Image (tube, rainbow, N blue to C red; front, side):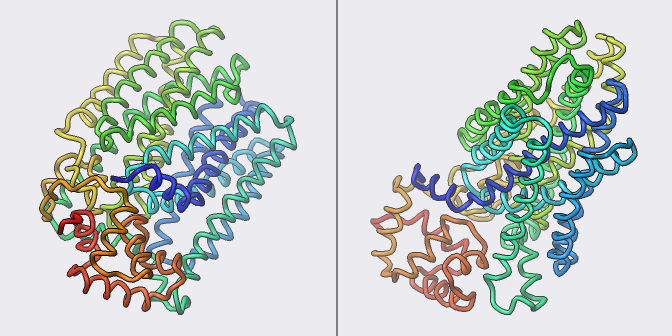
Length: 514
């Protein structure tokens, strides 16, 4: 079994992806807060959340454009990324300085479109690094908590005005630079970068995993059912949290509460708790935990309806932030986990956010109407509809976890998101129980028994532990791909494995007695 040493190794190797995602969360949350403050200067408090939902919903454009370019126009990535970086910084400055309402809306639209573009890259890089590990929810929660902590620090410690705005722009630029460095590092790692075939190879990074499932009709159908369930669940949960956000943003615009104040720390804390809980027992309890959290968050919505005074608004805000941390970790973890089964891996990690912002845009106006009418009966009816959808999508499936043995074949570890469907569709036999050796212990014994060289040991460790693509492994070990393939062929010959998956299967099922 993998221990704390392996956890630390994953964190070290993925620190760039963690920081990129944390910076995205900060710029996203801080940009949303900044827009609320600015638009409240032009419109009544009840209209602020409507404009906010419209502007934030525009980020879905950026989230979808980046994957389309990545797969359809890979040569345009560098140019469009440079343009997106310049647009993001310019749009933030326009958002800060706009003196007219129309210019403020333009600044908000450009800001969130480009944030979506950058966020799509950050989510995809993060999923490639962590989706096939047992630490996915915890590391995601860490990124989110860091982004929230940075926002609270900027709001409560930095002086208002130019200092806070400078931090926001600086972090946005840092995010763009880091994402560009990731892309260029990948291109630099392979020979003859200018060739179309090399760029195309970088653009189809899911083929090693997704293609296996695409070739099987039962597995493909299971994947589609999983996507439908997750889409319905995310949409219904978004309805609950968007209704809460509508009431709280209205109170914020009216000056009753401050959504950038210390209670936002609860969102970071709840995300960390959610990450720890969600990863328990192979993420078996995610669905029931999220359902209970949604129930608690709904109670705070009724608190807002019953009495709109500041005390109740503060209580509702605290419950909202506690639930929001769980919700963000939930839908991001779920879609990142199933992305390894998709043909377009780059698209799916951000789809939870896309569904979230689109549904929030559709739900916000009706939610504002319910809050304004103070109609408890109408609210109860809407909530009942949402809970039926949540119950069917999250609790109406048999089994949420794949076979424990599937952890070691790299293909079904994230199948907790797909239920038992994909597990039953697997063609590989389950492994027998093996002695619980640490990764280093297993590697040492395996290398000695199979008489592998030191270089082959390094390559074997990267293949079975890092889950990187062949391109990334070659760059990490400072090898050309042809040299790396020769070493892999030598390892396969000594072990009798016919492929990378077969080698990993053999490694994790091997015992010192074999």
